[in-house]
Image 1: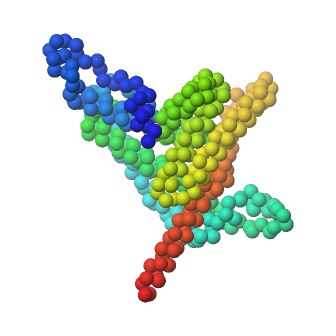
Image 2: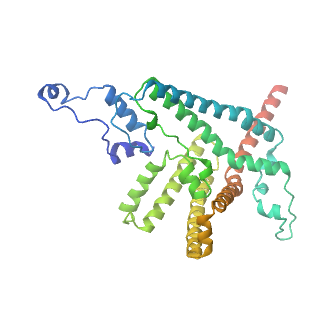
Image 3: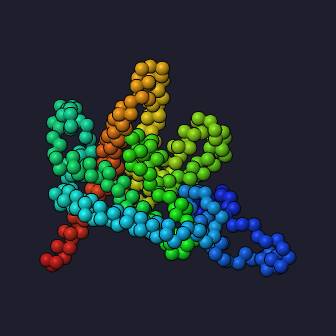
Length: 345
């Protein structure tokens, strides 16, 4: 929806080499640019490059056959590993957890987690203890959306890479970098979205946000306020796109998609503020020197950061997905009951 006008009106495309200006060539191609291997390759890159990757001039792939074979084998093993882990591990964990779950596991009283864990009471109300099953279910759902996106997008990406690199030989392996980064680099929420998560929609959303910044808010793109607005716009538009998908598919609770992505923007902003305050507080002290010298401390810090990111999603994701799961569970229960009644009648 947003990428089409971006491709047509906002981007400059220079993938096709300048045409031959000789009289003989001009007589044949001055009016029509006939399709050929180069133009077809360029068109594929223009219409299928939402990440705005920079490419060489299109043409037949120049990778040696030995490298192509290695690339195909490595890519095939990657897809196989993803599928095996998904089918043999993740799906079995999911089946076990959901087999022991019911509608009550997704009700609104299951959303709070800090107070039940700490046993804190509000207004003299008793707090039900959290069961082991509830903790495991919450932990699984908190990361399952990450894995589901990774499995689908990365598998499709690798298969298309094999098709265009090894079969059609239009591209080289370096033209198909991985969609996702290293999860070990996501030791802050900011790095999760900026370093690990795919950037399929980010450039397009950034372009639209910059239009609003320049033409509506009349701000300089280099200003701090503009950069903050741009970051918020990317998160908000992403949430809006997911909300439209939820509405269109009948998933319900579309507003929670917007809330989830906007909440992540707020957390990223808080992380940036805390990081700057920390950097200012330890500047010139022994702590700064120790952090620079001691690699073990840096590793510990990254591990704690990964725990923080998981904790954030552990707290936030159920507020996003539990209402959707509850709605789906109720619909499935009603459908089963309806089928049973029809069978009896």
